[in-house]
Image (tube, rainbow, N blue to C red; front, side, top):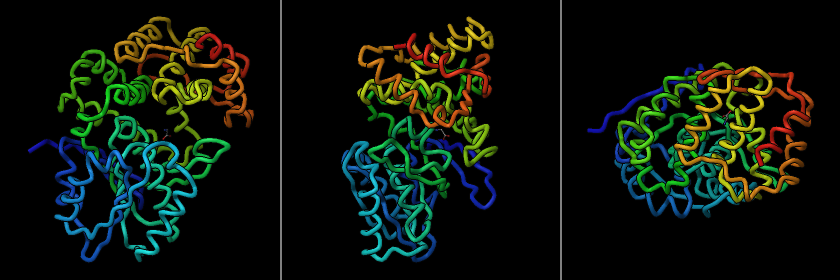
Length: 361
Ligand code: GLY
């Protein structure tokens, strides 16, 4: 039997557990059995359905769930109000009531979309995250942020809607292409950089095992990673304060993504952003050069060396100026002060941030 670790998310009436281990999809029926008469909607995308839906369906049905599957197209375009509206209509046509549960099987797009549908359908029903990419397992699937995009920008319509449970099956990373694993590693390294030097050291020493999808290494990595994120989220579930620490690398990173017309992956952009923002922290005298070098070395070892050839500097700079955090003129920038520690700073000027972006691309 594969081992299982749990991270509890103590959010009062919204409390839930994150379960992490190998082959969890095979064990869903026993780990999350249906209350009598319960119906469930499994929302997933084409590609994930082919890889994982049969296992998940079989397991949930063995746990007594009366399950109906809803498949959307792969890709970010599915995070759309029309797609969410269509899913709500299909749930209504199938007669799903407030006791129904949505299972979100997929990467960040599916977690955000299905979670958003769960937040709005009948004013909110329960949902369970079954994240299948490292990015979603390490970040997007944990913490209750759900959203769809607008033509005007990503994640502009959304909600805070905590899942009822999260099941992280590390075995599914076996079919995840390396580029996607690298993208998730950027968020894991971010969590280590802001809060846990020990996890940072573990990644330094175990990179080969992680990329070889060693089950024990992945389980330790994700358990520590989720605990770090949970420790921050529970202090500020609605993201008005300390949760901003989780944005390390994201202010410059989002601008880089826009500058590359989203041809580079989120984690790749975050890696560029983390280096640029930490270089700024060194220039401001709040982080040591040695810590920056250690961060740069670890990102390089994870295959996340900055390749900015696809980034249009003008587009990136324009995106930075439009950034909602900056546009509000209350820039609270998280910066790493040493490996394993970050703080929020309100003293960084927009010009300094623009210079950091310009140096990075
Ligand atoms: N991804 C950052 C957060 O959940 O706040």
